Each structure stands twice: as structure tokens, then as C-alpha cells.
Image 1 (cartoon, rainbow, N blue to C red):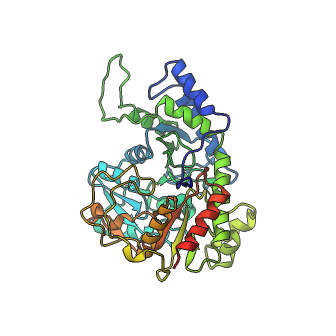
Image 2 (cartoon, rainbow, N blue to C red):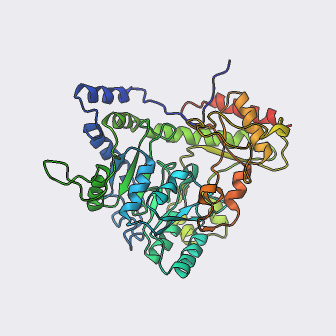
Length: 458
């Protein structure tokens, strides 16, 4: 029987350094949410973020970004990317009754922490080229929220969907114009760059994730990128239950048990030695999908725009100028955490007539498992029948695939949240699918996946 091909699984370093660091933690009895591995992992992440050949000094006016590039950025290793979003919002002063603008096309970890704080997510739709937050719609939303509520939103959360960079310069320009701090959700974008700068370092705060399916893993975990020592100190304090400096436990503020364990950080330290290898592999797999699916009618691989395409377009003149000055550096440099395709509505897939006939009762697309069984097999907003039929066909061929994220403005839990939509993300959700791209996915696997897609088309 053929091995199962998963969407994205962690890959340990060839030298087995993860086991070395874990063994040291056990041998020295550092098995708590602090210790040498945690400190070391944070420093290694800070060094990774400083590799920034083109810092933009014009992104700083309201505490967003750093006039010295990334030199003063500090990192706090945490138990999850969701915890990082939560603490980033707290550090921006978000509280009950506030509003936070969040990209609608995302995983729920971008929006749920807003609700944790008693605030309201204001959902903004995407643009068709990056699938990320539409900057022009962002400004429309800001103006309308000020007109309706008398105050600006407390924060903006753009998301690097599937690793694709958002238009960071335009988003930062708008954020600075209205004095709103940005919390970049780069959980899926570890190592992705925009105009040569690492995602997560443009805004006041940046969010990373090291879940088991991310570019590098700590089995579970995340990190918050902070702008300076002062912010780092506050976040570190909040992440360790906000304990005061007494010989006993004194708490004057509500804190959280969010620090990463020394064991998990040991895995992360080993992973940092293979991060460039992982980035190279994901980009190679993306290029192979683009090549092999190029002639498959009705199936389109989503990709970043090249510098040449940006120059030829009627786009931003500032970006064209930047390209002329940095021609060898791509404006969009995605890590391609997952490779994604869209399927035309008129493409016929084998088994399409049986799509959504049964209720899902197990794990789908890397989920931990379905705990709460749905009442019906369908909802009022779901992928087209041919997308579901292809997912099932691939699953039967031992290939894990899944739909793209369902936009938050289409989620029942956010039905009452203000939303500024243009139809882009909902349209992509109906035709989009994620394909395997992780370090264990070989060229042979990609060819098998493509041949299976071809065989599935009726």
C-alpha cells in the first residue's frame, strides 16, 4: 500500500540536534516553561529576524516598525501562536468594547483572541492577487468605523495566508496615517519576505507559530516579536502570570501561563539549523506544481507575482521604483507553507454527484479530530461539489488535501461582526484547495499528486 502523503509534517534535522537539546534539558532537570533552551531559541529567532538587507526607515511614525531595521526586535517564546496574538493585542491596549480590524480570510486563531478580550473583530476582505487583506478596503473600514463609533480601531491584524506576503508597505502606510498599531500574523509566513524584509518585523508586534505542521516546529508553540526591550519586558511578565518581584506570589494584574517549555524550545533550536533547507524545499515543491499543472485545464496554481509582472502592471509606482533599485530581490518572497490551487466551477470530477452526502466524523486536512459532530453535511457557504469530490478522491489515493480557510465573515460565530467584503475570499473558498508541500513531500510525491488530480477529472 502506498504511503500517505500529508499536507505538511515536521522534519527533524539530519544531525538530530533536537534530541541533543532535549536530552540536555532532562539531564539538567530543566523541564519547565523556562530555561537555557528557551533563552537560546529566542536569541536564534532574533538573529534570524535581523537578516534584513533592505530595512525601510519610513515605516516607524506610530511605533510600527523600527527605524534601525530589525536591530532592536526582541522575541518571547510562547506556548502557541494564538497566545502570541492574544498578548500582542493586550500590549496594544485592546480591551472590552474596543474594535480590532482582522483579515477575514484566515484561521480562527487570528480572530478568537479579539473575542477573548471582550473586543469586536472588524473583518476585512482580501485582494485577488495575494489573497491577503485588501489595503484599500482596510482604509474604507477604518474611516467607516471612526464615523460609526467615534474612535479608530485599536489594532490591525493582517495575515500571511499560506505564507504569501501581504502588501506590508501599503498596510503600514494606512496604519500610520490613522495611528493604529499593527500586529502581524505571520504564523503561516515564517521566513517569508516583502521587499527583502522578514514578515513579522514591519508592525509593532509580529506573531510566529511553531505548530507541528509549520515551517519549523517545536511540536506546539509560537512567539511574539516585540519592538523593543520595554515591550518585551511587559509581554514576558504577562506570559509568566504577571508575578511581582516578591519572595512569594504577588499578583496585581491578570497574567497568563503562556511561556514555552524548555523541552519544546530544544526542538526549536534543532529546527533552526534546517530552516533555510525547509524554505528552499517548499519553494521547490511550489515550482514543481506550477510546472506539472500548467497544462491541466481548469486547475490553477496560486503563486506570487514576479517583479516583471509588477513592473508591467499598472500598480504602485513606489513599488516599481523599489524594483528598479533592488531588481534581484523579489517584492513577494513567499515561503509557500502550503501550495494552493483553484478549480474552475465547470471542471467535472469523478464522484462529484456524491459530494457532501455524509457527515464528517474524523480528522480532515490535518485537524486534530472532529469532537463536535455537525448536525448536517452541508452549510450555506461551502466549497463547490467538485472541490469536495477532488478532496475525497485524493484522500482515497492516500493524499491529504483540504479546502482553503473559510472566511471569518462566513463563520456563524462571527455573524454579527462588522464586515467589509468584496467577494474575493468567499469566491476563493468555493474553488480553492491546499496541496501537500512539507519537507517529507518528494518530487515523486508531487508527480503522483498531479497524476492523481488528472485522473480525478472526468
